[in-house]
Length: 240
Image (cartoon, rainbow, N blue to C red; front, side, top):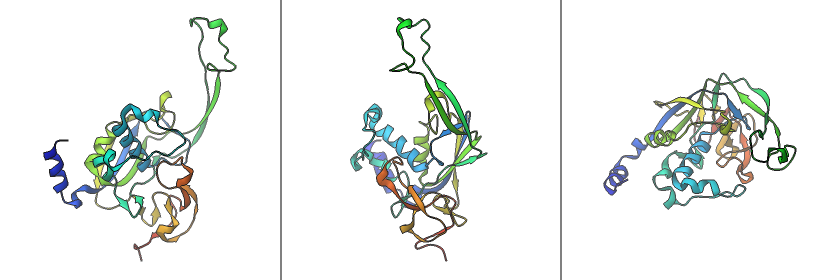
């Protein structure tokens, strides 16, 4: 981005940055899941990290949370709007939303491989694995958010798959649509939580369970007692 473009962007009114939007992914293959939901803020964070770090993203620690500095993030700091500390981004909504379980085998085919008779398929590097996945044969996956709509569109252009185990073909995206909405559906819509919301942000809630509520969702330090998606809630400072 040139200095002139950066100045023009900084001069834009804040209201032009924050747009309410809907993202619809049309899928070519079912989505594999290891969690009840996919999270839009987790997806966007993944794409931002790939943009900022490039191939260095793949050598990050796997069990330690790594934070990017404001200098590294640059314009990506505002990709999603925050309400208090909450990213304004929903969980996934599958259509249809049926869930199934599938068992399959991952195995190495030694035929034609040098030294094929010495390859042990019962242990070691070439061991055969029996795998089981929960999957959703959804035709579409929908998310809602509030943020810099053009920046979101730009980041999503890097995305080819969603969900778990993409390397074997799960969750391949056929096409996607990003559209602006007149109202905010990212946190609460029609009285229901659209994402995990810690109860400290709520005035009323009908259910509460320990859940991760911000990226990375695998990190234990991000688990807090939350109203789960779909629970009836009232945010502090909002509602009757």
